[in-house]
View 1 (tube, rainbow, N blue to C red):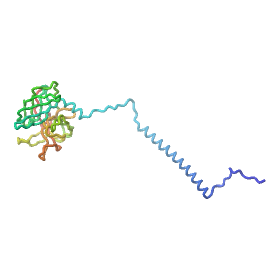
View 2: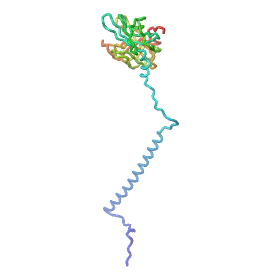
View 3: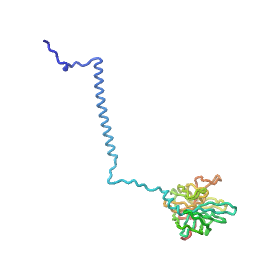
View 4: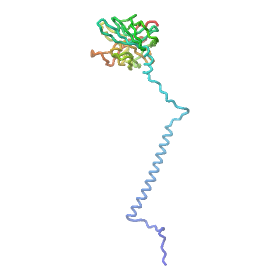
Length: 268
């Protein structure tokens, strides 16, 4: 009886359509192997990168963030701010700002805010109101010192600072357009500037130029440095259009060194 070879030992390769299916299976298996290998390689690289990117720590981390400079400056100067309303002979009211500079609650402001006033009323940060009078003035520097009749129960004189440099951060706080205790921020844009006085009294020189926004009502308010120290008294804003609104340039009389000298500060 003739013997036949077992079917599992048959080694005849597929042909035609069968050969095509065989190649498809081989390439599918090869593709799967490549895909798995690529995923493992990429996953391995990703893990390595993540491990390398993780910083080594030797103790607990902190999430404490220093408070913004502007808010610290505002909190420092706010108890010393004063709103000034001066009644003028023509029946109008001159609105301005001021800052307490002595333990006797004397107020420094711009001379043009109170010049010729028939009466002056000041409002302190705690809401206390009082009549006040001019006890000293330097018109050529546009500064004046007021003495209130009734000081607030708690007097907080501002700290006076030294000179400034171009590029220094600066802050202006006052009552622009009657908006009490408003703060704006900018930089010192120039030093030793001169502007023509509106009253025709010649030029006002040695001024600090800055770009923090100021408007009518800001005059007499403090110009501050990053430490909340008063470095100048706001005196004017540039208004080439003839309109009294902010155009990006303000001026202040320096009260410390630099910037051409400044207003006279009474002894405390």
